[in-house]
Image (cartoon, helix red, strand yellow):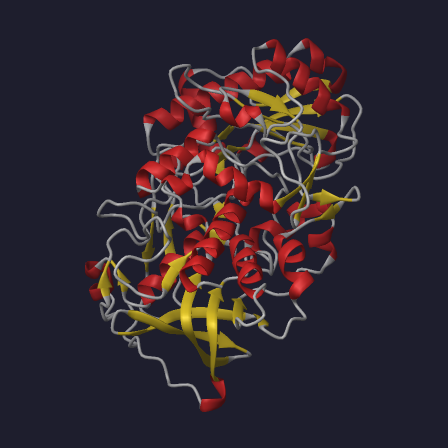
Length: 532
């Protein structure tokens, strides 16, 4: 443990700029919050983003999104070694670039199931989070270019959402095979499917003109970047929130190699994601007092839920077939998905496999099963669990802002998750080996007809992240909740959180769209509170 103190040198007067609002993190939700607040020209907004400019080819071209993983645009987090994954330390990619995850992810726009939001409303004691209430926010955000549905879909919003115009042929065959096992094919997975028990189809994507990514940076921020009331600093890493008693008044951050400080006269919004938001809170003295005291961090407010309740969708790498005639990836390289239940008694679909238009294996399963070096010679149906019962946590490792946090992901930490994913692997194999797929299959490469202990070993060697880390500063009313239904941090004035960390439970499906929703909701709450 470091013996450094938690103190930060006072910045010079030239660094002591004051704004009305400071948004810490220019990721998916942070871009939304900054844009909506800056729409009032009388409001001064500072957005601090640790990453760089998103206007680079690897971000802009939707077909090569995986090249960002492990690059300078990825925080390159790894989970701690876990016995539940046979000692593995899976990578946990998160965007380190303007736009955050929306600039580096697989571009699938999945709103989440009706039951997700109704359960959030129950947790928060606030009907404003119910499904029927949040539909209006989704409709306001979207510019939907797909099957018209006046009740459920919006047009004219900042986020262009569409369906791939020319998906790879194997995607249509997968729809036919899934329908044959009772998972109905639908035209729009964000319509009635998100109110029902199952559905398969071509996912909604944030792709324009064939292969141009629509990130939340270019959807929300770029159109207003020239406004004089909005300041966006890239390469600005927030370290802590400054408190005056129990009120948040400013933030300390590093920029251009130097310590800086900015002050907010109205509010500070943490939008740094499910790893950095709890870290910033803890380094600000807000968290479990036992952990803070153990590292010599002065306790400003005991809030034991900070960093707890970590959740992520689990993706298995994967069920792989060699192409009979290879097809190059198109659009977002993931043009099929489905939602289904591992157990009919469940209230909400808990499975979401996704097509990966290449060979997709883990660091263990890939070599073990001899996956081809030419990844484009195969395709993968990757089993996914989107209602996990496992819970992890994020913990401090030192008392310097440069010290990393330890991420205890606890994937497959419950027997229920293992059973669900075993069922999902079996279901993916049934679909992939169906008659409808025979024109696209030369042979199955992985995993083959494993059973019992062998199948469970494969699962533990293959399971990893869906890139959807969430829930570490959850909204609710119990002792482990960090924010209330208005996203205010308990016990601290002038401080809210607006990112995936506030989810009480992770949503059913990819988390980009719910993070946009959280940003829209936060902006409405802030504007209403300050009458702007």
